Image (cartoon, rainbow, N blue to C red; front, side, top):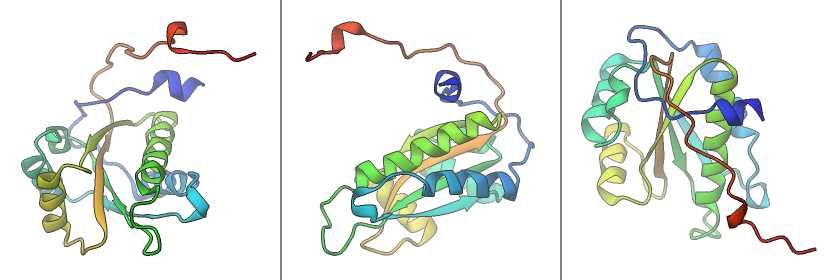
Length: 166
């Protein structure tokens, strides 16, 4: 519960503080431990630490400006199964994404989930930037780095949104 309660969307990072390959590997391992329908694991990942590419992500994605100061970004790429292209890949990739966010929080890193799918302009921009072929789909961009802000908690439990059947 601690990582869930501490997780925030971080939009300001300490510029110049790197995210190590070991940290990225741990985050990607967490992603790949996520559940997926029929254990299809319909995902691939692009891990970016190259400054010029991080800046380009910020340029082509209208809500990913924080990549200019983040130490890294992870692009989750959906790989819809050929036998079920309209299947559960969005839920599966979202579960992998949440695992990254929670693992990063437990490591003292900040993250921000920047949506790509299902926005065609964002999909096209990321597809072009990373040369992602069809039928693969850029699903999101996750900025990762050392937080330079501490946003207030926004989520809370709302009893009125729960129906108990006893």
